[in-house]
Length: 579
Ligand SMILES: *[C@@H]1O[C@H](CO)[C@@H](O)[C@H](O)[C@H]1NC(C)=O
Ligand SMILES: *[C@@H]1O[C@H](CO)[C@@H](O)[C@H](O)[C@H]1NC(C)=O
Ligand SMILES: *[C@@H]1O[C@H](CO)[C@@H](O)[C@H](O)[C@H]1NC(C)=O
Ligand SMILES: *[C@@H]1O[C@H](CO)[C@@H](O)[C@H](O)[C@H]1NC(C)=O
Ligand SMILES: *[C@@H]1O[C@H](CO)[C@@H](O)[C@H](O)[C@H]1NC(C)=O
Ligand SMILES: *[C@@H]1O[C@H](CO)[C@@H](O)[C@H](O)[C@H]1NC(C)=O
Ligand SMILES: [Cu+2]
Image 1 (cartoon, protein in one colour):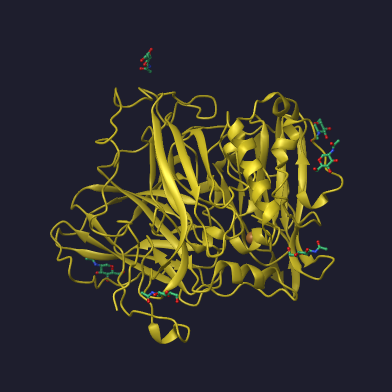
Image 2 (cartoon, helix red, strand yellow):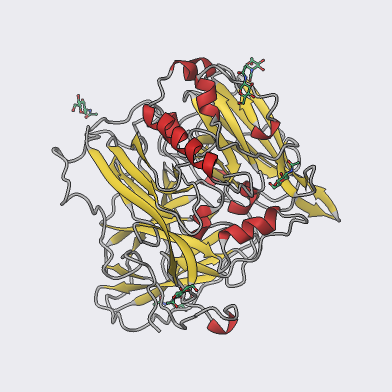
């Protein structure tokens, strides 16, 4: 039986366009809007070009059935594509993205988050329901208008319950200054764990009474494709064997840019290319001093841009591979492969290269000493606010086992977005402790010391900022900062699992710091879908007086009116934290 595998997406096929993909259809008047600015000399937090170019997209969200790995499954799609469509802009352009909620059978609210975008002038377009907006009601639309204020590789996804685990995630590419030359932009390479169960049932199971750990993922996809052993498919579910893997093109002698993204639900990925070394040039939206590696580690939400020189003969074909870490995640089928064909290779043959061994022992990112941003941005040694946050796991009053930050498990209220309350002058919520709001007042810098008491890694993501990563490790932080003049900086960093030494727990720590120069309410959360559903989430509020001075656009109020109308006539089943 023939399955429709990727809907209308070309990603992972030999017909996928090289990037940039938009220049022919929407050329810029004068080439590179950033002029002679370079990654080394430009402070991207103080300057971004303003091109005036609008990048318009219409994204329609609906349910469908697809078999990305041969196993037929209900999914959520954007414009009938899986992965969701690629968004592109030049640094300094403005995205104008209209999202249509056509989710039916059953209906659900939704909202899209643009991961890593600072949203400096537009904190209400960050896309988190209960925080900056009401959900977009079924049958309704909302237009997000925001600047492409950083450049590099990112992604966007639904931030409503665990919807993105059902397919609502796509790549976002913003072109800016290059920090190392290359010839060919191969584009996004999405590395994603995949569950054959429904995201809704998994969330019900995780936050239920008694709660159960999330199931192991069933497969690992590269750009939405992979084979699956149909003898393991659930009974009664249609499964096509040898559904096929993703394919990429290399040109011999040329240097290729691959934009690696982990848009998965749980698994830490280990990415390699047989017989090729990779040069890391950026982590998240932060260009770094290039360094070579054979393995790239990516927690959920993280991106790494690598350059790969095609050094083999022109007839070569090799595997790229990504494994969900056996040591740091839970997967039934962790190994994904895709084929890379050189320009004279026979593209009808599967590569035969063999995998090289690698070290899977460390459940964290590359050592902080290895990653140095191109543009140095020192963290002050004397931050105004120092906030400790302890991460634990435990039951709430009704016995549901949830994640807690400083003893509280987050649960959002879709009807009362916190940013909108703050804008009206209401900045404290004693009756709603489960909103987990940390109001930093008008203080200008924050250091957050996270302590993990559970032997599970958490990719911690902050909205609205790239943070400095001051330190990470096991035990008590002794105050040492790695590269104090130029620490690693990014928007997701893996918080190591607590260690177990002679049967006793030794907590791990992660210390981050940032300047609170972006008035708004910014989530800080674990990016594992099942953990954020179970409350591993806080809201940080910064520059409250400036929030009150902002004028919120009428689109946001209209979205709340539409939501109030919908939820007034329909039962909204909020089974988890909401995010
Ligand atoms: C960059 O370009 C601007 C104007 O386009 C010019 O004023 C400036 O001197 C240039 N800077 C460098 C370092 O070339
Ligand atoms: C996938 O499953 C759905 C629901 O059972 C069914 O309607 C659809 O026809 C199936 N698709 C294929 C190609 O088997
Ligand atoms: C590729 O790497 C493997 C070991 O990982 C090695 O045995 C093989 O000779 C290499 N092939 C080429 C063409 O370099
Ligand atoms: C703001 O900074 C002052 C001075 O460092 C500190 O005492 C205070 O606790 C901070 N307030 C908040 C809300 O973080
Ligand atoms: C602030 O908002 C919360 C949540 O809606 C509400 O309970 C509280 O009464 C409000 N406080 C004020 C002072 O309006
Ligand atoms: C405990 O958490 C579950 C799952 O989020 C929720 O349904 C329930 O209402 C919570 N109980 C209390 C008392 O808050
Ligand atoms: Cu987590």
